Image (cartoon, rainbow, N blue to C red; front, side, top):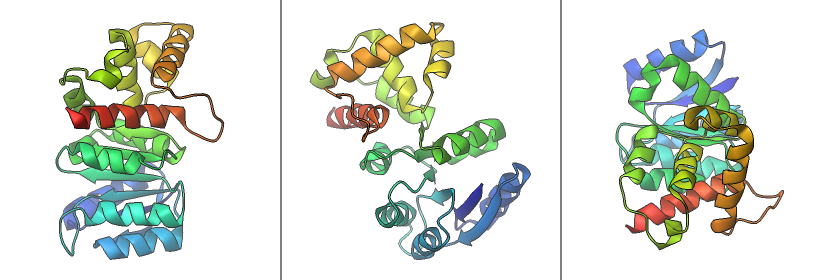
Length: 217
């Protein structure tokens, strides 16, 4: 894959470049600031952008803002954001357009090469990859009105869906058949009012509903 890497810390940037190279990917551009990241993403139109949330010049959420701006110019541009800390709002903002092709991982996840590579592939192919720590924190919260209609199994399914797992992977995690997972997925979509529509990604919309609900608690 062709990758734009946006990371201002030299050692992590060099380490990520070597790691991506070892996976057989090509880093076509690197950026050290938010504005440079946006420019590189738009100019190179990579298969995926790997972007740090906090970058100069403000060192707040400049990287995230750059990624979102690039996606507005190139709808659906796959972006995998890396962060030092858990922020639900970051995940929600990335998913807001409902197009998929987004991921939000803690930087610690990079040290698990296999997991990081799997997340890259998933996001590049249009899926989602939310850090399990983010999902775990959501699960610690009590269900509010919007999710109260879901059964415990459906909530487990939605949590795994938020991590970006496919029906096959969810089936393995919950020791269910794929047919059972498909039925639970359909019932979850129905309860969340997500009608079948070929122009939308219902899995992404379900995750957005999950994040929005947790944010109100």
